[in-house]
Image (cartoon, rainbow, N blue to C red; front, side, top):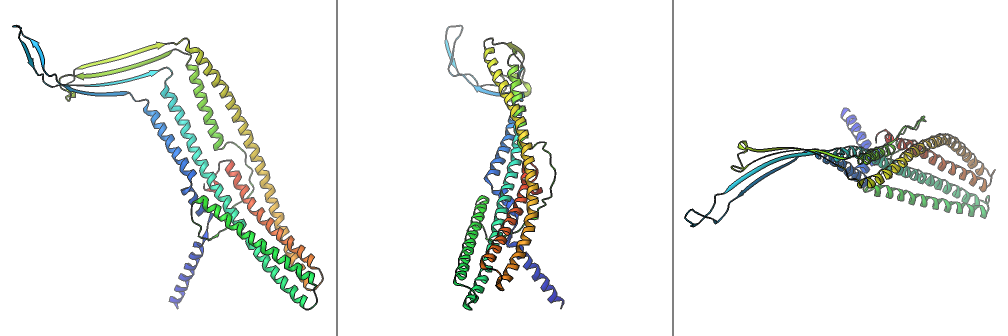
Length: 426
C-alpha cells in the first residue's frame, strides 16, 4: 500500500513538472532576450570600451621611459705613425647603454581633461547599459502581453463559435419543426460564418505575435502555452526626480563645462615644467649598477601666441553658446519627464477604473446572454435580440482583456520612465 502511495505521489510530481515545462514564463523569455539580444551585446561592448578608455587616460600620467642598448665596431681604421707609415687595424666591439626618464606637465594639462571626461563617459556607458536592459525587458514584457491577449482572444472566439454552433443546431431543429422561418435559419448560418472568420483571424494574429516575439529573442518557438504573470498593479503616487536619460544629459553637460573651462585656460600663457633623468655608460651596456654618466634636467618654459588669442576667443564663444543651449535642453527635458509621469499616472488611474467597470460590464453581459438564450428557447425573443446579447458579451470579453493587459503595461511604463527595475527585477 505504501509503495502504491509513493508511486502515485511521484507520478503526480512528474506530471506537474511536465505541465510546468510545457509553459513559457515571462521571466524565462526575458532572460533569453537579455542573453541573446544584439542591443545588449552592443551596450556591453560600449561599456567595456569606456572602461578601457578610462584606463588609457590614466596611462597618460605615466612618464616617458626609454631604454637604449648599442653595440658596434669600426673596420679598417687607418692612422699614420711617427715614421709616416699607414697602419690599418680593426677595432674591438664597443657596447653602450642608456636609460632616460622624462615627464612634462603644462598649465592646461591634457591628461587632466582626458581623465575627467573619461570618468563621465564611463558613467554614461553604465547608465546606457542599464537603460538598454530595462528597454529590452519592457519590450519583451509588452510582446508577452500581446501574445497573452491574442491567446485569450482566440479562446474567447472559439467559445463563441461553439456557442453559435449550438444555437444554429437549435434553430435547425426548430426550423424542421416549423417553429422558425427560413430567414432565421439563414441568419444563424451567416452568424456562424462570422464566428468562423473571427476564429481564423484570431488564430493568425496569435501566430503572428508569437513569431514576432521569438524572432526578437532569436529563439525557436516550441509552441508552448504562455503562463499568466502575477503582477502587482497597485496605484502609487510617484514624483519625478531623475532617470538614466537625464543623468546622461547631466554628465554631458559636465563634460561641456569642463571643455568650456579649458577654452578659458587657453587664454593664459602656455606654461610647462619638465624633468628628465638620463643614465648611460659606454663601457659595459649590461652592467647597469656600474653606470657613471648621469644627467638631470629640470625645465620651465612659458610662451604666449598672441595671434592665437583670436582663435581661442572664437572657440570660447562657441563653447559658451553650446553650454547655454545644453543647460536649456536639460531643463526642458526634466520638465517633459515630469509631464510624461503625470500623464502616465493619470492613464494608470483611468485604466484601473476602466478595468473595474469592464469587469462589472462583463458580469452583466454574461447574465444577459444566459437570460437571452433561455428566452430564445421559449420563443420570447427574436434571433436579432439574441445576436445583440451575444455581441454585447463578446465585446465585453474583449474590452475586459484589453483593459487588463493595458493596466499591467501602464504600470511598467512608469517604472521605465523613472528607470526603476522592470517587474521589480530588471
